Length: 351
Image (cartoon, rainbow, N blue to C red; front, side, top):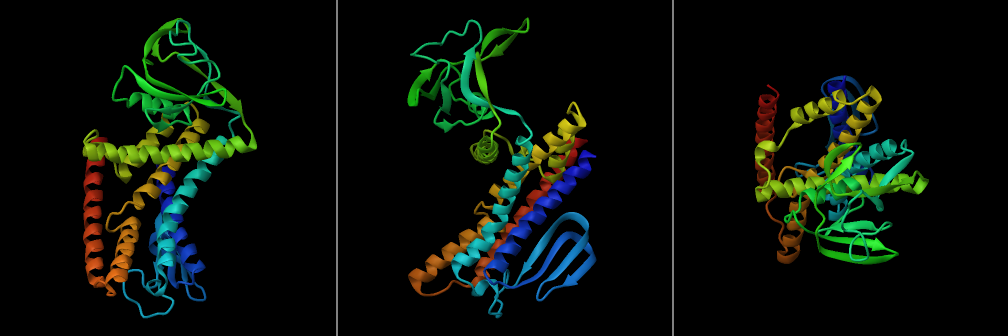
C-alpha cells in the first residue's frame, strides 16, 4: 500500500510542478499548447480554446508544453517574446508550487496535533551541571546553535550532532526578552537515568505549547524551512566530501524509504502521517533542487536567461541561442545519466 502511495506522491508532485508553470504562463499571456496529467498513452483528451488538456495512463507526473519554451517560436504569444521578468516568473512557479505543496501537507499534519514541542526550557534532568545565570535557566528559549537558527527541537538535535567541536557549543538563548550568548558552552551528552535505565542525554527538558490558529501556521512554516535547511546541508556535505555520492538515492530509493517508514509505523494512521510528512520533505527537496543553477533544470534556465540578458544589455547583441540550447541539452543528458546511475544503485541496495 505504501509503495502505491509513494508512486502517487511522486506523480502528484510532478503534476503540481507542471501546474505551476501552466498557471504562470496563462497569467502572463503565454500560449500553452498542452497540459497533461500523467504520462504515456492518453485516456482522455479535451481541446480547449487553445490548450489541449489530456489525462494519460501512467500516474507518474505530467507536462506543460509552453509555446516557444525550447525553440525560437515566431508566435507573438510565445514565451520567448515575453519580457524577462515574465519568463523568470514562469520558470520559478513550478518550484514555488512544490514548496507550497510541501507546506500545505505539513500544515494539514500539524493541525491535528493538540500541542507542539518548543525550544523553550521547562526544566533539567537530575544532576544537570550547567544551570544558573552563567549557564541555562528555566524559561530560556534556544534560538541558535553555532550560528545556525533553531526553531524546532529537531533542529537543535541536528546542529548538536553536526558540531565541529563535540565538547563545546556556541549557543544563543532568549532570556527575559534579551539575547544571551553562551560561547564555548560545555553542553555535551551525559549519562542520566530515565525510567530506571541509564541513557545518554543533554539533560534538557523542553516545554510544549497548545495549538492555536497562529501556531499551526508557524509550525508548518518552521518545518518547511527545516526541510530546506536539510537539503542545503545535504548538498554541502556532498560537495565537501562529508557525505559520499553513494549515499544519494533516486526515485526507487525514495519510494523504498517511504515504504519502510510506513511499514515500520505502529499503526496505519501513524504510517500515513509519517509517509505524508516524508512526502512533504520530498516536495520541498524537489523545489530546492530544481532551482539549482544546473543546465537542464529550471534553475539552469533562470541562470542562463539572466546571463543572456546581462550580455545583451552590455554588448547590444544577443548571444546565439543555439549555444544555450547545447548547454541545456548537455546538462539534461548528464542529469539523465545521473538518474540512471542512482536507479542502478538503488536497486543494488534493495537487493
